Structure formats: C-alpha cells, structure tokens
Image (cartoon, rainbow, N blue to C red; front, side, top):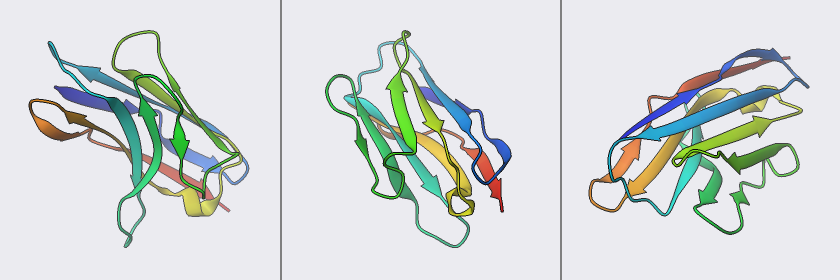
Length: 115
C-alpha cells in the first residue's frame, strides 16, 4: 500500500489550499485515513481523522477552518484548508493503519503560510 499526498504550496495568511491523498495497492484494508502535520521543531500532530464512514474528527486548532472529505474513489481523501495561518506551516502527511501491514505514511506535502 502506498499513500500519495499532494496539493501543498506557499500561500499568504488568510488564503486556502486543498490537499489530496490517494492510497494505492491491491486489497488494502483500513478503517480510515488520517491527516497529520509536523511543523519545524515540533511533534507530529493529528489534524483530521476520516473514518470509512461516520463522523470526521478535527484537531481543535483547525476546527472551523479545515474540512476533510472522502473522495469518490476508494482510498482518496481531501483536506480543504481555509483561512490559513502562519502556524499552519508544516509538512502534511496522510496516514493509515492497514490491517495487514500496520502503520503506513505518505511522503508528505509542504504547506507554507506567509504572514
């Protein structure tokens, strides 16, 4: 199973970006896909948790600004980020806990928010 995240870039504070994550591989089995981020010098933190069905959970720091969603294709999720702040600057990763292979991380996509 491989995860491919994309959509990062440089944006001014108050701007928006949309990240995409696609999982590929045969017969992968996951309960959902999560978005994490890691800012320079900080620990990786959970941003949004997207179960296969049911309610999507968000970190308090992004509630009301970020919206995660499921794509039509299996293993595809999005993260719409609005009203971005400089403190949102980080490498954003998608992650799955695959039932056979365990923890799988995507390669990350860099989001830089300038003030």
